[in-house]
Image 1 (cartoon, protein in one colour):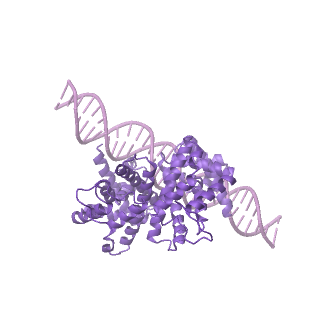
Image 2: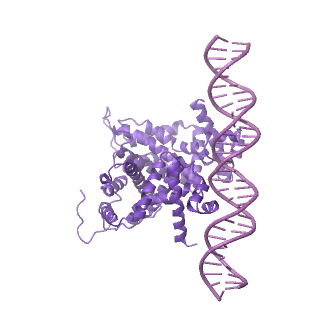
Image 3: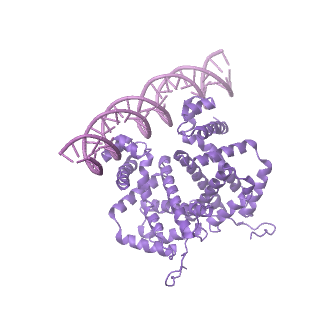
Length: 216
Length: 216
DNA sequence: CTCACTCGTGGCTTTCACTGACATTAAGTG
DNA sequence: CACTTAATGTCAGTGAAAGCCACGAGTGAG
C-alpha cells in the first residue's frame, strides 16, 4: 500500500475517532463505533492502529506539525525569532481550511489529554517524537552528533517548553479567548526555546549575507 | 484504606511486576503471573492498577524519587548546586539498601522503556508527574502561582533535562560504566536545571546568614 | 461481648480491545 | 481471460479490565 494512501486513511480514521472522543469521551467510544463512522470494518481499524487511544495520534501530531515543519526549514543564517515570525505571517496568508479544522481538532484532543490519561499518553508520545526530531535539528545546527548529551538536553528542554506553550495557547483558544491575543505566538515560542537552551539554540549559526537586524 | 498501606502494597506489586517485565519482557508477562508473584488474586491487581504497564509506575517513580525529595527540601538561601551536592554526599553515607535495589530496578525499567512502547508511556507519565510537582516547587521559590505560564515553562524545561540525565546515567550504569564517573551527577543535574530555566531556577532566593561560597 | 457496619479482598462472570487464520474482493498485469 | 498481489472483511479466539456478590477482618456503639 502506498505510504501516502496509508497515511491519508490513518488520518481519516483519526479525524472520526477524535471527533467521537471529544463528543462522548474516550471510554464511551468503542472500536466498532470508530469503524462504523469511517465506513470500515473493525478489523481494519486495528490493522492501522495498535490501540484505541493511538487513533488520536495522527490528529494530535498535526497539532505540532506546523512547528516541526518550520523548525526543519530553519535556515542557518536566521535567528529563530526571525524565521518563526516570517513563517507565521506566511502561514496566515496561505492557511489551508482543512489544516485549520484539523488543528482545532488537535487542540481539543490536547485539552482532553488533561483529564483522560490514555489520551495524555498519546500526547506525551507525540511530544516524545517531536523531541527526537528536534534533537536532529539542533544537532545539525550545532554541528554535533544527534546522540550527544548536550544536544539531548537542549532538545528535551526546548520541546518541553514547546509542549507547554501548545497546551497553554490551545486551552486559551478553546476557552474562547481572542486569537489576536496570540499573534505573537511565534516570538513566544522562539524566546521560550532560546531560554530553555540557555541561548545555545536561537542564534544564526552562519553569517548572513547582509547584517542581521538586532534582536534586543 | 490507609494511604500508607495502600502505597506500600502498590510498591510491592510494582517490584514483582518490574522484575517479571525485565526477566521475560512486558508482553510475555500476564496479569495472572504478577498476581501469583505477589500472592494476591488477579482481581486485586486490577483494583490497584488500571493497566498492566502501569504496574511499573511506582518503581519507575522511585527512579526520580530522590531528586524530587531533594528538590522539595531545597532551602531558599542555597543555590541548587550547593544543595544537591550536599544532599548527594549525605545520600552516599546513609544509603538504604532497599532504596538502592529499587533504584536498580527503576533503571532497568527506564532502559526497557527504550524498546517497549508501553513502558515508555509509563516513564513519560512518571516524568509528567515530576513536572507537575516541580512546577509547585518552582512557583513557591519564585513566589508565583503554580499555574503561571512562566513557571510551567521552567518546570517543563527543567524536568525534561532531568529526564534526559536520568536516562543517560541509568543507561551508562547498566552498561557497566564506572559509577565513579558520575560522582558529579548532582552538579550536572543542577547546572542542567539552571541552564534549562535561563538561570531563573538555581540561585538562592533569600540572602543566607553568611556569605555563600562562589559557584564558578 | 455482640451486633452492625465498613472496607479490602477473592472468585466468578462479562465486556471489549485486540489478534490470528482464513475467505473475499479489487486492481494490476500478462 | 486467468493469475498475482495487496487490502479488506469474517469469525473465532485471547487476555486485560470491570461488575457483582460474598466472605472475613477490623471497629465502634450499645
